[in-house]
Amino acid sequence: MNIGTRTPDSEFDFTPEQAPPLARVREWVRDRLRALHPDLVGDTELVVTELTTNAIEHTSGLLAVRLELLPGDQGLRVEIDDASPHTSPLVGRSTLGTWRGRGLVMVEHVCASWGVRRHSDHKTVWARLPVAA
Image: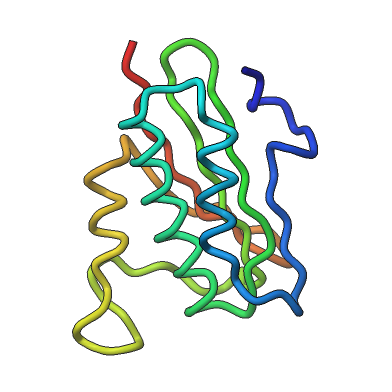
């Protein structure tokens, strides 16, 4: 499996007119990772769903979802691009109500690390999941 190379099947692109197809994104994740352990696939689905939902609800638009299997035992990298380079994800807080805001808490517990890379016209929220030997 070579999902680490930037190929058409390693990225799920969105257009601004599209409704967020979270079920299709999860199916895409399962299809790309079918050779990996089911626990890793499930954890990746959770992370992709949470980060994608954040981009949909808290930014100017979701742009792309990428997966990259890192060399050796470095893990699996998830990247979510959105159109709001100046906003930051907030752990445990939501602008949509007090009953929200737990997604990044789950991401923190599942992932080895996560962070944000800013670009002039978008940002990338990334997460690295451990891959068991």
